[in-house]
Length: 255
Image (cartoon, rainbow, N blue to C red):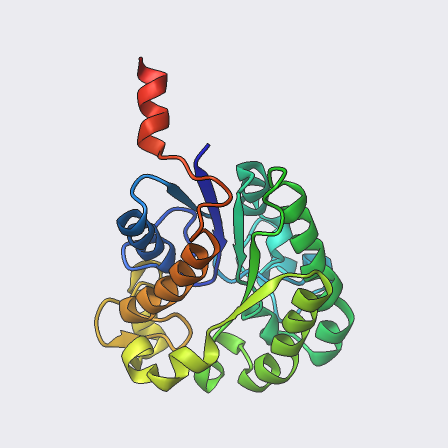
């Protein structure tokens, strides 16, 4: 059976690939390394938090104003989360936390740790037997200028440590993005543009020299994909767990 790769991330708000998004780049890189072996699944809703909706501050998240909106609500309340669990991945990469930095320190200290651990436990419980140690928690990059209500200080001083603690307690490995992307921030994120211009660009994919200050442009997404590709290929460098080509499986089915 081929390896299924689940990615939840805040790079793109769509549940299928945007050209220039990190899951799309990751699929391309993995196909180059091991053609037909990996299927990358992306399950993400823009603006969602690791903190459950019921714990979020009403004045800071739109789900309390309109219950029909998934954006800026807890990820566990979205259809994407249900689909992610049904995907039954062999590998999980979980990237949440940026939007949690919109909330108060009190909310984060009380709820972020148990809520993110609940997500981690549920995703792991759906993994096939023998694959349940293939999971990584990504520590999100810095957000400059407190864009979209995301507090840079809160992200660094509270969200990052809580995510690291969750990974330690649940025996997940971490992938840190801050130091890598910060060294070349102008290249990976580009010039921060006004919110008016941001609204005219679909799906937060920035192929040129501009960014909204939160989502990386294409170069940044490609860098994230390179980091994740290296982690995954190192994990499977000895061929264990066994990998089998999607093409080979398809050929058997067609005969």
